[in-house]
Length: 268
Image (tube, rainbow, N blue to C red):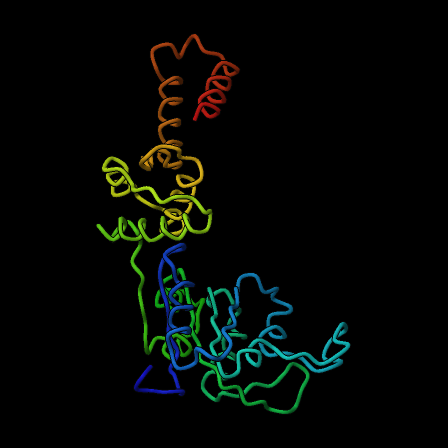
């Protein structure tokens, strides 16, 4: 970014859900040459297919039934700054072609309009899927993939980050203690072992939720982190399974099994 100055190339962030792609996109913007400009974040899966083009590129008055006035799109709103397109692969292929044209030519045309509008925008795109595989499956445009992946960052899942889990937990702990205005408490040795042994299917987002629950509910001197919800549910599942398939199985009615399952779930 320092070498390129204002004319910044797109960045593609790939990683599982919850690994921190949005946080990294914000960091790139706020520490780059366009930090003084706007950062516009777009959750692409949340855009209705019928309105996605209008949301991204804007529309002129009368472009469709409810277009009672002209409206700028998100490309224009991000002018001079950064446009973060989260889960870009969810956009239809036809709209992907228009996004590619906007990136390459730095111009857009509003829906229903004839005039081309210059848009000086830095693009950061994110995907929780391997876009190379999405291209092979015919679900993402090859040319757009090449255009975006000049600078490609693959964010590893939390389960592959080893001791980084403890560093992230400490950072999240400090942030959450400030947010909730409580005194900071260290994570116990046993708690650290539990953090390192958990598979973290929800990645950093799940870790944040676990630490927040500990900060809010724990009254002791240390955070024990003994309430890893997914692990507890697995334990409940195993215990209920044992009730069903154990030696007393023949003596249990369906209502007994349901009652035992419900009670085990409530206990957890």
